[in-house]
Image (tube, rainbow, N blue to C red; front, top):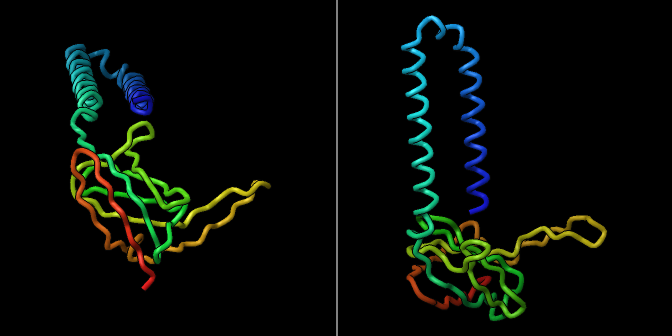
Length: 175
């Protein structure tokens, strides 16, 4: 909600700056035509009210409409738990959810930083170990991909998420 408030404030600032610029440019032209100035003012105010109404409606209705299912499970590669892998569930519509496997290959998906789960519906699932890590001296270390492309960039993995809790285990193979 905090990010939405910041974005909304930025939109208002941009609209205000545009309005000031248009006002400065049109001030002298509109001075001789008061009816045009009033009509233009009403039009600008109407557009702003519609934008504010739509934005407020979007902010207050989006969370209530998003149906989530809680998802956790394990990932194994060639029979061994896959640690430090990113598990990504991308729905056909809506935001992607992510999880990171622990040392035993277990993950739980997060929809938002403070909200676990994934959007209900059909998902493409991607699992990857590729990453960049910061070393103690501040350098960057590339972590190579261990997972075959058919499970990440060209994924064949899919899942259907429903409301409630579900456990989805992934048994990946190099072959």
